[in-house]
Image (cartoon, rainbow over all chains, first blue to last red; front, side, top):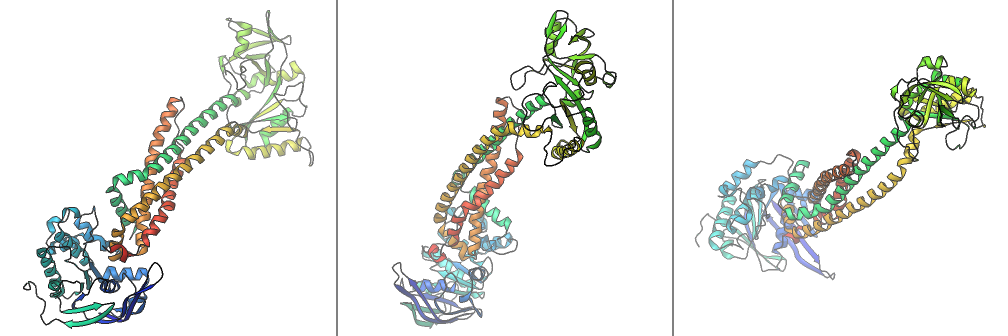
Length: 233
Length: 407
């Protein structure tokens, strides 16, 4: 479902010196895979995730998502791709302040030209175990709960691809574990998941691990151990 | 994002940031409130002026024709005018001009002695046709008005003004008494209602009315008029009526270009426009100042929106990540700016109307609301929101989502 061919991303610093965040990255990810990207900070893993998420555009190479070359898309086209086919889960949850859990889950539906399906949002909150918290403001939720709302939000338009950037990074180990179990469950239903992490524990939920260093993929390994809900510590 | 969603989203954001929303509205509210109050007090004053003007000159459906071209000053009297306006002219205008309802001929003179027993006065003397009193809105407080029969029979009857009554009759009942005008006896048949003081400060009650036929044949021995009062069918068509009358009179007087008119037609509407001119110049200036104040209110919206945009970077990043395009973000912020500005404007209109009515009552004027100004205020607030929301919305739309989401 994802095919990156010779992707490069060069930034320009304020003084004009170019910085190569990614160089010559080629990668195939098939439908239903659970892939982690590991790497030191500044290695380019976030840039890679942003390009996969159509938030950033590569300066070189081609990105085929479901057979379409999305690297050449306009802003509106890429926005539509993010809206329909990609769900984001962030380390900092990124729920909107002064907004209820339910309203947060409904945001992706705002940008679809159809009536907002409130029942769907409610059932997603139920799915992540927060049905009784739907009308609570985000400031009233714990970190784990906020991340669950964020996952429900990522699922609102039923995207086949989920991108997670250190989803357990701001959580204690119990909350982190339950988030990872939720993601594994979503993966086992057929959703493709690409997750950035540097926590080996968290990485063990995935079937495939990419290691990125200085903007290039240096290792691409299938994990022997299949991910199952409730993996041992 | 459709319109309904834009509005509900803007409403949600603004209602959950009440303090900020309040300060954003303030400038526009004050500006629009002043605008509404000023225009409504101005309108009340203008209506009061017009009402006063109407009391003085009668109704707006009357125009006046005087002999002599060019600029003549003051009331032309029989002794000074050119003898060009004839009784037949008044009749022809009534018969031929399609915009005219009726006409009344007038012969005017002054400096003529009027006596009752040992008392003497010299009021203005108007010889008028029977319709004249109705056309000019004159009425009697005692006795009867002039009749067609009085005019046809050259009756020696006179209707006196309140000042004449006071000067010559005192407490005596004047009806049926005899008055001598240039030694010719007339019978008093009516007393005019008092019309008070004119704009120049002089009394409008020192006058006599007699039938114009009597005036022409028995008193002055003149066959020309000092003026013709013309009542229009539709006061909106004054300009057309003036054209028609001009054509009729030029034809009857045998005037061909390049010769100029030997008569002058007044347009009460134009005269009134002149009276209210000073007033409107001043209020235009004030309105201009207030519109500038409202625009300054717009800059408040702009700067607070710019602050909000940088505070809400993360929200913008999230919205972009879940599928908002640049355009969606632009519309969202523009929608907020327009909504806040329109709310500010509507509150301002309400406050302005209340203030305007209160000032009018305090100034003893009939309260008036100038609805075109209200509609203009609504448009102005929409415009302020659009114009001053543009830069913040543009900035919000162009925030890099990757930067905005970086924690």
